[in-house]
Length: 183
Image (cartoon, rainbow, N blue to C red):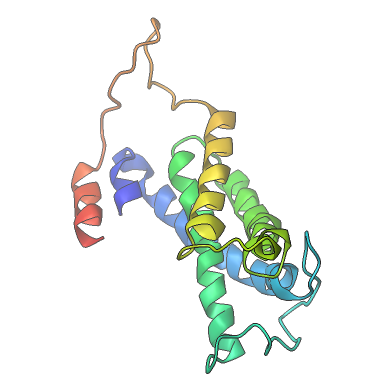
């Protein structure tokens, strides 16, 4: 809701759909490719392949947590990482292009960096500890967001001919205020 509140009203549906697609694309992608790349193997750079999570992960599971619960937990982190990106690219990305971006984050970017941090990769080997997903989820999403925003440039109409910023009219600030209030 916060993200939709900072875009023009005409784009609210598009923003909401992109966030939904992060889960619709990200979940099967992460289950087919990502989870294995993150946790199936002890390589320094990458895990392994384990389509549909059929391997034995008892060594990495927190005590008393079943594999399916851990898989869902990690899937939500993956989708959150992808969702962070949509706000930075709002109003400047074709829907299909964003879906491809979301697929790449869910299939490769989040799982590989997650392996480095949580899956036994080189960073965890150096003793690195992530605090509540601040690096594995939020930094990865933020870096992808910065790359996407830098590639796309500013929103059309954001700057006048002299290069001075101007307000883009038609924002849903009430939705944004509600989203911030809920959070």
